[in-house]
Amino acid sequence: MITGELKSQVDNVWNAFWTGGIANPLEVIEQITYLLFIKRLDDLHTVEEKKANTLRQEIVNPIFNDEQQNLRWSRFKNENAAAMYDTVALEVFPFIKEFRGDDTTYSDFMKDARLSIPTAALLSKVVDLIDLIPMHDRDTKGDVYEYMLGKIATAGQNGQFRTPRHIIKMMVEMTAPKPNDIVCDPACGTAGFLVTTSEYLHDRHREIFADPKLTAHFYNKLFNGFDFDKTMLRIGSMNMMLHGVENPNIRYKDSLAEEHTGDEEVYTLILANPPFAGSLDNESTAKDLLRIVKTKKTELLFIALFLRLLKTGGRAAVIVPDGVLFGSSTAHKSLRKMLVEDQKLDGIVSMPSGVFKPYAGVSTAILLFTKTNSGGTENVWFYDMKADGLSLDDKRTVFADQTKHENNNIPDILARWRELDAEASRSRTDQSFFVPKAEIAANDYDLSINRYKEVVYAETNHDSPQDILRELGELENEIQADLKALEAMLV
Image (tube, rainbow, N blue to C red):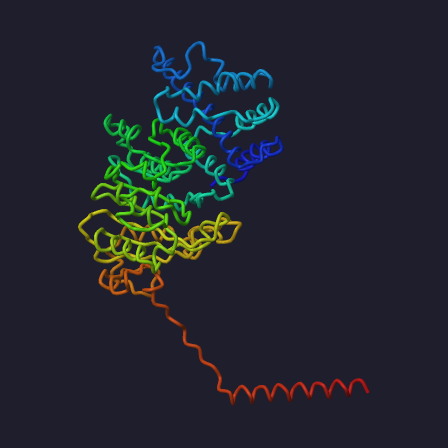
């Protein structure tokens, strides 16, 4: 979370676009992303340049060759506005569109990229403002970009909502990605789950960068994402690159469509917050998903998709609307039964409805499960999240004291999840508890926490009606006596 001067600098960039005539938030973030990416390329080249100078050798695989030095951010930022605009529009943009070659997924969705900044004056102003933002530190860079993404305050047309970064981080920590995992988000949007996974591995598994095989896996196979919004694909891909993952497998794909089947049992970890768009046409939906669960509901089809994509032994942490947990349709019940009986349902975190504000007030939960195809569910862990560190209104104000349990349950969720054996002794009146599989089956596989949570009502003692009437009479006598005393004073 960024505050103070840094936040003000980012706001200045955003406001410059708005006053310059670009009011669409998605277009603003897309243009900012292009410029950050261009600046990132120059930073990477500078690092390699310094390394080569120290070793007194030529740069290995330079980003810019000798004839392309004028395309570097550090060079064109010093040009006058008109010359800068020509350089960026006519040379830099064609360069970044072809940066990965012609036969890559990057080039496929970058071919539609365009500079939509209308004037040289606006470009010059924005370049100057971005140049002031410190983007060398990895954490700061991530925070800056997340803050910018947070300004996309409208939901997509297909039920897409940006997942808060702290919720993503909690889900990543609960699944604890490993260096040899193959991670997928089939509705990746801006690639928040993949970026946070890369940060987790960077911080917790430094051995990746000392082992050539793990390094190659990290940069080329570990991160996979699909989306059917090409704007999101461009933003997501460059978001990964800005976070140091140079070759993620992020590509165009309508994950639920019949023409995009494939990838069966490929991934070891799925992290996702799929769009909840309502219903799809059966004719266009992948038939293998309909064989798993016969429904038009996208939230159920996505869970079927996750089961198809995961390898046996693979695990998932995914966000679902509350209706998935207690819906009464045949499809709802059969899918829940499948998770409990055929797979290993590990846990459910029920989240308050304000988590997705100001985008939406929907009530959601996190499903955590492991694909086994042979059962394995014995007890399901439930947690009733009541606070996530921010106010649950449209303002989503960050609480100053994040250590107070009543302000933020996330540290408690992580602590209890990591020590599940200790949860067995908790009662149903606690904030988390286990429920045996047999009890869930007896309740028609209802997975809503309210079905199992016990509420203790405090005993309240009330005075008898006779005592209340006597007290009212005494009060009435006092009032009458005071009125007579007041009348006597006025005579």
